[in-house]
Amino acid sequence: METRYTFDVIARVRTPFAEKFGIPRQSGLAAGVSGAIVFEEAFRKPEALRRLDGFSHIWLLWCFSQHAEKDWHPTVRPPRLDGSSRLGVFATRSSFRPNPIGLSLVRLDGIDLETPEGPILQVSGPDLLDGTPLFDIKPYLPYTDCRPEARSGFVAENDWTGLEVEIPPALLTKIPAEQQAALCEVLSQDPRPAYHKDPDRVYGLSFAGRNVRFTVRDGVVRVSQVDFL
Image (tube, rainbow, N blue to C red):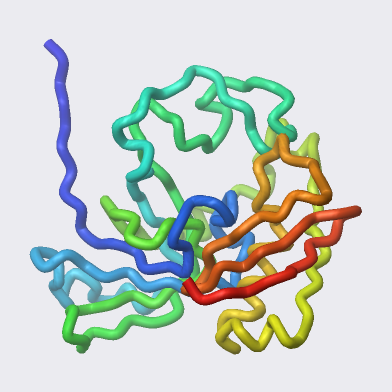
């Protein structure tokens, strides 16, 4: 007899990312990106966060909500390999999984216990769509979670460095000052799909309520337009 499980959504994450395109492919790659964790009403219990402030980082277990109803694939094309090779889904962190569960490590910057929405966790480095539902939060424990001797498989074999980012000063001023460095980090990660290499193609990235348009040529991201959404 098949056993099925259900999970409660305990919180949702607020981030600058209104759409999937442009979200860093792993947590922490754009450490300057800020986010907030807002609990669902049934879980707005300050006592549930007692002594969490003693930890610098937390694990988030969450749902790939946009893929929850889609079929999974036994093999996928990781962006790290430019989409040129298929690997087993369990050797990757692809969103097309049998169960659409994601795992992210973020920095815990602060806890505000007294807001109209109950306790809110301020975090940095999220790789999550705005509104992403959370299933659980766990503290990061260096003594057991950190394994310096661990191997990284195909990731280590295909090293990648970030792109250079150029934003004209007049356009940069259209981005909130506290989000400017974060936007540069996001763009440096090359948001384009792995198979897109056309240097003349203009892309649009939704970030912090702005539509940021850019091209990529010779390893440089050049922002050409910034508009309010």
